[in-house]
Length: 197
Length: 191
Image (cartoon, rainbow over all chains, first blue to last red; front, side):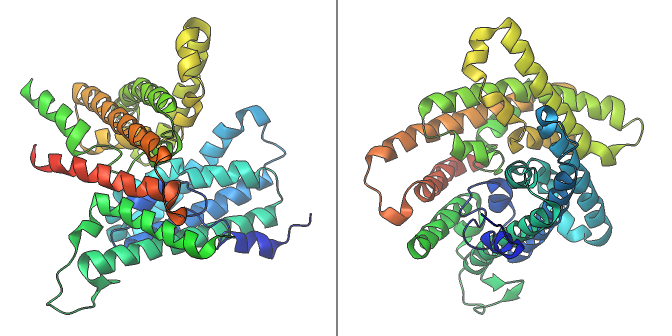
């Protein structure tokens, strides 16, 4: 079974798009998607960590002993998360403050660890990079979409710009905690209706 | 004393770690299909979270702060939690096999449970004292267990219900969690 770089890349965009198809890494998905901007920012940060950790894990896969591999993965991931954390503090401080705790929590995001364990540890560097990029973009798209829907319904704005004029009554349920669960559940339902293989 | 009671109530109900702060959602959906696994996971989280809360607080206060190493917080906390989990697992296997049989498979999962890491970070962010951090860790863990067990009970009932096809499994679980979260919302004005 030949694996091409293109197919590894595209599977993250639809067939296995996280977090809809792979129900992993839900915490940031629910926590930061009150606006589209936050969602996309979080998605990009996760994408960076995902690609870098996938490349490094894959490059070191013959050196890492199988028994302590999880600990090694975690150190690699934590290193890149620290890089993102410091970079965001320097160049995107406002976004960093809004995302708050969820940036350090990328360390324990199941998607990143899951891809390292399930994919990068068994495949070569190029394939792993493609996998990381695909999964990362898929994750960013999902977060952006969820953030967009919640922002439009919950506050009546789209990427910060007002949509419906002053007479619009925002449905604040959507930007609060319960709305996040319901909105994600219904989006998953819509995806299931169209995407059932 | 009154302060601690307020802290406990706010950590268990008002700021419930699963339903209001969105931390630890992977095990929330992963282990809530059966009551048994939900109970096991809750017990393991209470156990580890209290220990992790104490140890990370000490790491921050005695190692990171005095040497101005705060930027290493993420990496050092995750290392502390991962080794703690490993240590607890080995200790339980040798000395308390009964408990190990109950918690065993859930322990490794806890390393990647954002609830544990999240509570440790909250303790630091809120600048809790040692006692407060200890009480808050315990209360958050109890809140986690409460929400998980409640949710598992509801999900067992959903299994017998007839659910439309596209809504099945995770989708209906998410909507149910939303409604459960709405009920916890009612505690908002309490503290």
